[in-house]
Image (cartoon, rainbow, N blue to C red):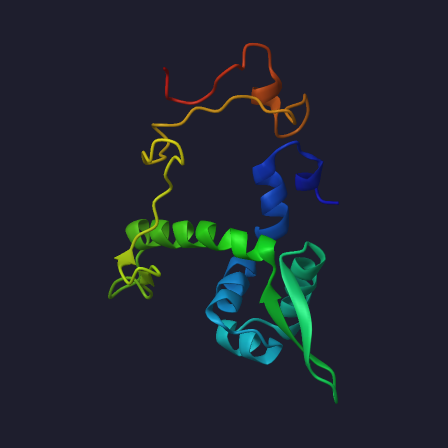
Length: 168
């Protein structure tokens, strides 16, 4: 287990699963429909050994599922599991950040279109009031997993009832 797995922090655990270089791009490509090893290797320009390791890790973590599509020789394709589908909105939010702060020359390379037919930029909103979630509108309180140790020092410290810039 890597050091991230030892922390009582959901971000650390998520980074332990999807934070390796190439992994978000592999997940992007699988979401976009590239599901076969050779297609992923070609699109990404990644070494076959590294791609194998990343795919094996994502399968073991339950983010991707390996499904056979050919018997002789046996070949597999990769599909997003429920956990894999759940990471897609976070990847879209990361894409929106990249479009705003690190846009390639010529503008965004991809646009998002919702099932309603409208183009959109992802925005995280509160499910209760519909307000936009930003660094200025959220505070954090300790949860049941907050414990003294790596990654939860602030949340597990005395008086850590609420952290962040928002003050009610």
